[in-house]
Length: 350
Image (cartoon, rainbow, N blue to C red; front, side, top):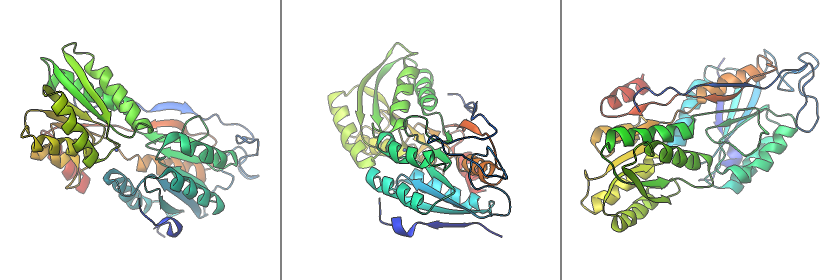
C-alpha cells in the first residue's frame, strides 16, 4: 500500500544563539471527554469511538486530508510541500490533496470551502493571512472537522492543534546572536519585515527587538515591511541604507528578503560592510544555508516545516481515534553559520 498525494485540480492556478537552540514543546492538551462536542455543539466521534476528535476514525480506512497551502510559489512552502509528500509515503491510510492559495486570502478561503464541500476528514492549513481566514476555518471546525494549523495560525481558538516553530523565540535568538556575536560593541541595525498581517512577521520582529535590547549599544534605526519578497526587500533596504548609511546589520524575517538586502548592498558597493541575518535555513542550492556558505549572509535560523509532526497528529486523530492531542507543538530551530551550514545541507540530502 502507498499513500496518494495529489495537487488539487480545482485549485491549480498560481500564486517566510548558540547552537543548537531547542524550543520546548508545549504540552497544552485538548481535554478528552466521554462525548466531546464541536464548537457548534454537534457530537464529535462515532458510536464506536465516543469522544474521539474525528467523527470518522479507526484502522483499515482511507482518509481524505486537505492541505490549504498559503503560496506554492515561495521556496519555503515548496520545501514544506516536498517534505510532506515524501513523508506521506509512510502513511498509507491518507489521501492528501494540496491546494495552492497563491498568496491570496480570497483564493485560500475558496480552497477551504472546496475542502468542506469535498467533506475532507481533516484540514491542514498554513493561512496566508490570519484574520481573513479565521471565519472560514472556524466554520469548518465548528462542523466537526479536525483542523491542524501548520506554521501560521488563524486568530482565536477554533482549531484542533497548531504545529510550527516559535517565531518570537526564533526572532529573539536572532536578536541575541546579533547583540552578542555580530555587534558586541554596538551599532545601527535595520529590520526587514514580512507581510505584517501574518503572525510570523509580527512575532519575529518583536522577538528580534527583544533580543537586541540586551545590548544597549545597539540602536534599531529602521523597520519596514517588504512582504517576504526579495525584489521589494532590495528596494526597501536600498532606501534604508541611503537614509541610514551607518547601518551595520540587517535582520530579515525570511531568507528571500535577506537575499534582497544582499543585492541592495551589492548595488551600493557595501558587500561585507553590513551583516545579514535571515530566517528559514533551507538546505537547497538557492536556500539560506548555501547563502551562508557563500558569504552572502552571516547567519540564518532554521524554520522547520513541522510536516512530520503534523502527519503524526493526523494519525493520532484519524487512525488512533485520539480523544486528546497536544494543542501546541513547537518544533526545534538551529542557528546556521559557516561552521555548520554544509553539515545541515548534507543531512537534508540523506
